[in-house]
Image (cartoon, rainbow, N blue to C red; front, side):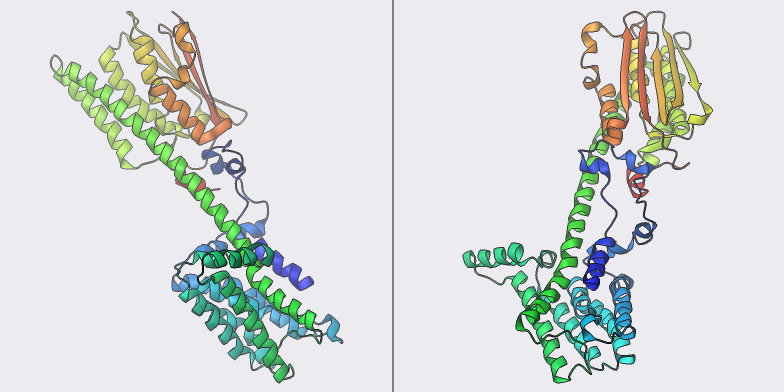
Length: 469
């Protein structure tokens, strides 16, 4: 029973870390939440984090095959060694090993080569120490049979469907084949495990257990349980790892969906901003070509920075540098006497990571709808502070304000504000907030509150933020 407990722990313990909590509850934490942590508290899981990924790869390089073989073979080689060294006076408490099960498992998941490497590893102590000389040719048989079964199986997904739970998997599979006759791979894999265990028991009895280790019993029903144990020993890890494999696919699909949403939102901002800026240039080019040239130069700087690398997270310092070029364009358009810009930025907030181009739509909205209609112009104040692990950014204007009838649903109206609001929901979920306060004739305050992420001094993409978790 101790061996089975260890075997089950081994199959389950080397899975990837648990799914991030925000993927289990409709993404309350958002994409960027991963950049801050969600790490397993167990150092052992973190140490072997990269190894289980090899299990789920269908096409492996030579080095990956060797890594996979080591992952499967080393623990069970030690198990065979423990069986040989820890001999008890009575056979009632003698240890056993899973050399057959792990070799078949390696052949099914990794192919014949991986099965042979694992088989040679687990048989080496048996041959050298226990003088069980038939252990090597038998593991070759296991590996070749399992590897051949994998090779002839047209759909590798059938291997991952293999389950030791006969009542739930095998029964349904047989019942389905009565309705639609054809080769059933679940039945075939089960028969292979049974036949290989029977072959081992037969060869072991012929040599009286001296040249080949095997588990046997004089009771027929106990022998049936031994064969069933072999079937479970092969199918149980496949079942456990397949659950992890499905979870990984769901996480990857969720990430891909959110990445697509982010790309769509970014693609809304770029044409919108470009269109408005070109309108400014067109209004200047006839009567003030020098100023139009300056605006185009600023626009080129903005587009160059945006096209240089497709990133979704930058430091607040970099975002402010981008905003400077944009504000220079607007100051040229409105005139320095009509548009004033003030910045109140805490130095400690400059390295905090923020979504790229998150401020430009808000400033554009404040200038065009707040300051623009005001004859005497006004002032835009950009303020950044931090409190209780959150970055607080405020865009304040003393313009005409928002009419009361337009305040309801303002976060969902227009391209700029609704885009920012949607991006914050995608990236941070419930960890962020966006508030708009306005008084007609006095101005508007837009307040963003997002978690502080100071993970790097370099621009960070969404994908990079995910990997860092």
